[in-house]
Structure formats: structure tokens, C-alpha cells
Length: 260
Length: 217
Ligand SMILES: Nc1ncnc2c1ncn2[C@@H]1O[C@H](COP(=O)(O)OP(=O)(O)O)[C@@H](O)[C@H]1O
Ligand SMILES: [Mg+2]
Image 1 (cartoon, rainbow over the protein chains, first blue to last red):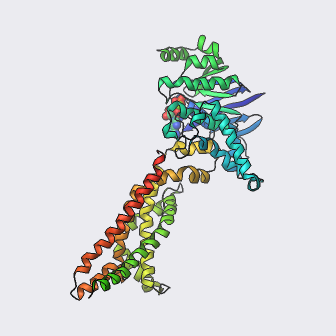
Image 2 (image 1 turned 90 degrees about the vertical axis):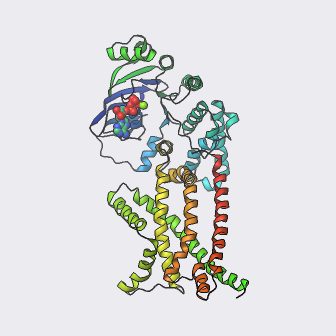
């Protein structure tokens, strides 16, 4: 069964239809890349699935749990919605790290806040916090940031910031991790370290959805690629086929423009 | 009239200034935050009402507001200010309202200058709006508003001497009584009190700025 099922998702801003009925599925452990020219609706799609925008219509099912359904009358409380949202992690293009917290605290903040709701929190506070920190340190080690845990975001390079933000998202153990152009805000020489981290996650079968303009990377890391054009999925398929053998004129034009 | 007599009288007067300064901050700092949220409300009646109120308070002289607070309740509703010092109470109310409105605009500027991405990052990490505000946004806002706040604090200590128009016995009023008896110098000497106080403020705010220097926002 697919871990993510998006059905006929629509979204308008005022009169502009940005998503005109998007449907796709993603299998557990697979990587889906979303490509398409600027303004085609890629970010909006990610934001709708992450509840940063509310879609107008359609249905989103994560791991058998309907997290959004425009047809349903069931009204979720804010709390329930937050819980559902946690099934999906999001890595932003421009990191959005919390500047006043050091690297470790950026990763542990949300977990520590959540831990306060545990019934045994008062009794085991020390131990709970220690466990959270262990977990965060392990993630940061994996991101190659063991020597930066006490640094503040302003002391890091763009690539390091993005790796912290990946660790921060991973700390909540999302079922699916979304990336919105994770290397677009980086200097070209720094994109490699982020792509490497994502590649490693893919090898560990982390389920991911990646919006990217790095075609070589997309082809290599993804199982499946969707090409968005003006609010619809204009072409989709296995990575090799979509990039190696595009069928629509729009995709051909897009790929040749990108490779310039 | 000996220097030490004048000095101690002036100190008693200045204590009134400092008291009004303290009370104003104590209440206007939190009230300003509430007004700031009102003026940013998505519910437009609340927003318009709050902004209208802020416009009136910022658009009229504080001196006039002192008169209004002191006289109008008595004239219209026969209400008298309770407490041993009704003049100070009236002055405090006028100052709190006035400064809360100025603070609210500073808060609003600070809050609105925080990038949307900070809220969104908090949200996708499962934090509630309140948690995001207190754990993520607030300290960044504080860092940004320290310089304009230091200005307001200095203006406030000097503004407190306006309270003498409703006969709060502040330092200028005390000095004025000496002048009326032909002793002019205490009036100029009061400047030293304000200068020292503002100097102290400058040092304290400098420390706060330094404290918050460890991060960039
Ligand atoms: N909050 C918004 N309000 C109005 N229009 C928006 C908003 N967000 C995105 N859009 C519009 O939606 C379209 C798709 O944007 P976006 O999803 O960011 O595309 P992409 O990420 O593929 O570049 C663009 O035309 C953009 O101007
Ligand atoms: Mg985008």
C-alpha cells in the first residue's frame, strides 16, 4: 500500500488556480522528485500537504490515515491537525533555523516541548531530556556536524545550516520527509554536501519527496519523478524514463532549458 | 537655603518621577503587547478599534490626556480616584495608556519584521502558535526592539515631569517652588538628575544589547 496518496488536490489564490487537480502516490521507502519550472505550483503542493496552506479540494492519505479530505465533514481540532502534520517533515529552501538557539537546541526544541506533555515528564524530566539530546547528537553526527553542536546558526555555512535543518526535521521521526529546493539557497560549491546527505537517506530507505532543479541528482536518487506544469502533472514515471526519454514537448523544453 | 536642604527636597521630588516611571513600565509593557496583538488581529473590528484608539492616544498631547484622566471621571461620573495619592493614580493611568500605545507600535514593528518562515518552521515541527511565539519569536522580537525601547525609556523619564500639570509634586515642581522664592539654580540643577538617570539607562541597555549579541536575527 502507498504511504502517501494525494488525490485530485486543488488550490487557488484568489482567482489564480495554482493546483488544478494533482494526484500521485508514493510507496514506502521510495523517493519522489518533483520537477518543473518556477511558478508551476511545486512549493504550493508541498505546502498544502504540510498544512502550511489549506487546499481547496482533494484528499491526502498518509500511511492509511486521512490527513486531509475536502469532502469530509469531520472537523479536526488544532491539536489533532498538529499530530497529523507531524507524519510529514519539511526542509525549507532557506533553512529557517531558529537563530537564538544553538545547533543542538534547534534539533531538540520541538521534542523537548512535546516531552512536557508526557505523563511521566515531571518524574523523569532529566532522563527524558538526556534521551532527546542523545538522539539529536546521533542525528547531528550522521549529518557530519558533531563539532558544531554548540554553534549558533549565524556561525554556520549555508550547507551546514541546511544539514542542521534536515536533522531538526528528522528528529521528529516523520514518515515522509519533504524537501523544497534544498540546495537553491546555497552557493554552488555547497550543494554537493546536501545532495550527499539526501542520497544517504535514500539508501536507508527514508521516504522522501524532493522538489529540485538538480536533474542529474534527481535522476540518480529518485524512484519516480513527476513533472509539474502550470498546476498539473504533465508527465510522470520512472526517473530514467522521465528525464532520459521525455515524451511531452513541455518537458523536453524544460529539460533543455535547465541543462543550459 | 542650604545645598543639602535643596538637594533632599529635589530627591523627594525625583522619587515621584521615578515612581511614575516604574509604574508606567510595569503596566504599559505588558498592556502594549496586548494592544499590539489587537492591532494585528485578523478580526477587523478589533483591529480597527485598536488602531483607532492608538491613533487618538498618539495623536493628542500627553498633557491633555493627563487633564482628561484627572478631571473627566469626576466631572461626568462623580468618580474619585482611590488611594492616598489620587493625583499620582491619575497620572499613572494616563501614562500607562499613553506609553502602552507607543510600545504597541514598537512591538508590532518587531513582530511583523520576523520572517514568516520562523512561524512555519515551528508549525511543521508540531508547535502550537503560542509555543512558537514564546519559544521562537519573542526573543528575536526583543532583540530587535531594544534600541527603540531604550529611546522610549529615556523619553519616559523626562515626560514624567509633565505630571506636575495635575499637581504631582515632581522634581520640576519642587524646583519651581524654589524659583518662586527667588532661588533659581535648583531648576537648572534638576538636569543633573535626569542626566544621571539616562546615563544609567544607556549603560543598562548597552548591556542588554551585548547580552543578545550572540545571535543574529
Ligand atoms: N500565498 C500566495 N498568494 C498568492 N499567490 C501565490 C501564493 N503562493 C504562491 N502563489 C502563486 O502560485 C504560483 C505557484 O507558485 P509556487 O507553488 O511557489 O511555484 P513553484 O514552487 O513551482 O515555483 C505562482 O504563480 C505564485 O505566484
Ligand atoms: Mg518553489
